[in-house]
Image (cartoon, rainbow, N blue to C red; front, side, top):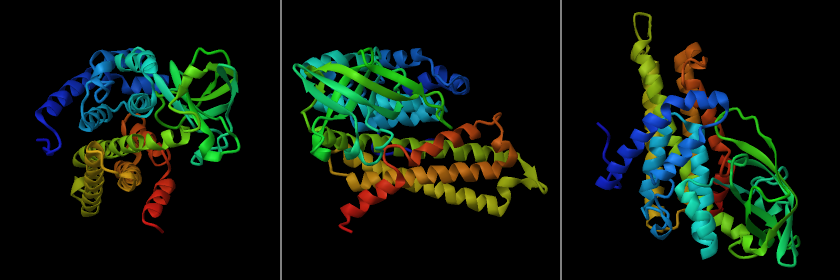
Length: 383
């Protein structure tokens, strides 16, 4: 019997069952195949739009569900349970990285052009900030956007862009005032069929292989001024304001993945017999499982607290950074120890654990590394 948390209503429970039915039918049976092909079926994305799963907390006037943040928690807990981590990552970037910027910083014309089809599953979005020479230090990006009459000319390149190879539109961060540091960055919404936009290569990753990650180049790419997202030279602040849902989503994916991974190990340990009894009954193994289960519960409760704060509009910068680093580090610990418990079998591709182990590794790096999260926390503590 699933534990009942006070945050979830009957409506959330009904939504969860609908998502679970979709995931069991449309995702779980194909997770391994998509990983091997290094591409998920785009029809699964379209179907999520048809079912209303892409716009659960998007404004109702644009076709969204107008739901609370717990609808997002419900969605991604069930997506990760399907085992299709790459697909979940692609959807996570679309729903909780690219689309929140459309909620907050677009005008009415942009909402109609980009947000409405994004909710319907008719167009896929991405966010392009990271560059070869600028990762955690967003202020040091080198991509430029130079004013040219009624347009801007963008030159530069981006790397590690999730959905970059398949997106229909990308939010691009560029320097509009090179002398102003972080105060000279502007965001642009760019259609990927714009002349000068190039997907130079799809990157070859260790995990999340069904989710495309690309390097992008912009060569004299001309975009109209109507492509400016929000305000000129306010891009850095817009990017920072949208980091909270992204980091929170990574924390949700981490504890949910850890739960799934540990259950794989427990199921194996109950069946595998050595020295006359199931290895789950050897005290060392039983105690290790108990320790991991406790850490997962702690990471989940911390993340739920952050979700509650975010849902109620309470400042949770510190708490989200805590949840993000702790949950992702715990998930990686669980994946490592689960593989150790399963021995050679855990390392074999015939067991889904090895894919879960590969997929989990990136969690401590994306959306701000563990070290960046700790730096944020130290600053909130005035250290």
